[in-house]
Image (cartoon, rainbow, N blue to C red; front, side):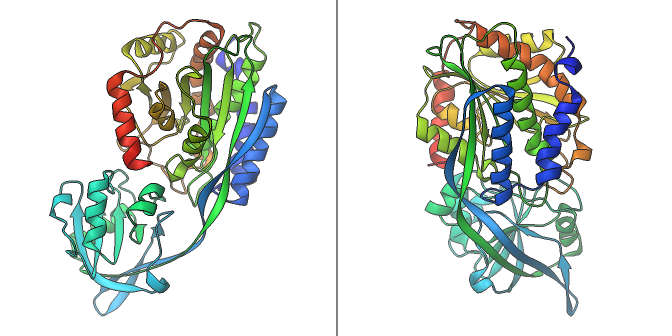
Length: 434
């Protein structure tokens, strides 16, 4: 049976349209995210999965945001498109703040920050926002009025949405932080813009997200399970057709196909669609903290996140020993899927909380741009910019891998993470997740 026959495009499109056309934007803690979770649960049950249920978890939800950025243009002020980062506070009293624009080229300028060195100023960060707690503390201690992120991965005229790390917000403090389009930042630097006026009025509320969990029960449920994951929430301002309705579409397709497989599963396959991933895998972290799985409970996690670019490169982020990499890449290639395998610990997707627990993982992603994906967290992440053909190609290679692993009592690679990767996962996890 070919991938197009096993995974009909009409069924993939049906699931995609449910998430992106019928529901649309699904920001964490919203009614739309909750509706998506219930729809996914219903489709898991129809596919033949058992023990289908939702698990609630706490998150922060951005209900409304009124954001404005103006640049000084002679004697007048000119507006610039901007969005607040989810989880960041508003400006004090929701007032507009005026300050000198100061540039930070990160991460190389982080060592120059000192307590109070940016007081009364507005810091434009070009490059990544701090991903180390030391750099974040330096930036907070420098005490700028606000931080403006100019993302060097996305050199486009539109603004992208993003979030801040919840753990750092609670423990280290967070500055009013927003994003502007790359090309506006480019123009500010080229034209020598010196002064900005910034206002953020954000309504952040404690809310509830949800994980959707289903099982295809194996004949020997004492064997470590195989866990397949994706996330159903989105960033603000887009329906998340690639990030990550595409991953949920894969979960639903695999649930249908595995449930109807002629050879029964020996191991249980657990399918989980996580909520609040866009706030640094809050849903996945909550699941791992609640259930405390280890390598004896879960043998491997396979995560699908952003897998549907029409034009792109298949990237497989792999946490585990070298034999796992060799086995997986050979199996995928045998079914027509060549991947760039990167054996490393990545803390920015839903497999990572499992890595902290010593569980190996695969994360499938399809990149189309040196920074990842050009439509990342923008209004361009729509159904027009995803490909069912590429998802069929992925599923056509992943299904035989999953089914073979699910029907075997022993695997051709060692359980758990190598000691060096486990040490890295725990160190990074303490810093980013607490």
